[in-house]
Length: 124
View 1 (cartoon, helix red, strand yellow):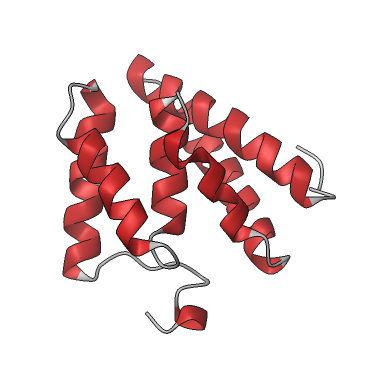
View 2 (cartoon, rainbow, N blue to C red):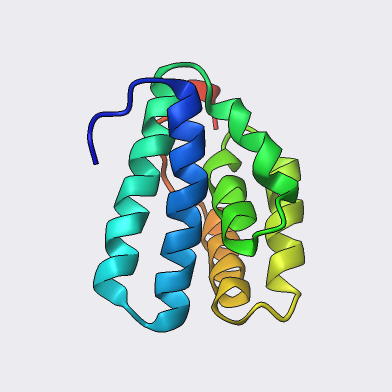
């Protein structure tokens, strides 16, 4: 992937990489899943650095479970209530690996074990 040039591009890539990361997890392709997780995180970091992280909120009700879960994960430090609600719904659903991932994401968030490069900026 080349360098991200705009927030619109980061948003589009975030959605694509979230879907591909999710599919690779379901397929048990860990190397591919790790690749798309890293690329997804590059999108999140770009959006944060360009004061556009909140634009991921449009994905909190996306039809795609991996996109919805990824957006909720990224927004935990800045939209905690909404993100926890989304992750709780996924965790309590029958969404195979996504439910398990959401469950552990919430557990680690509640324990204070998740850290984001932008978390301290928002006083969390």
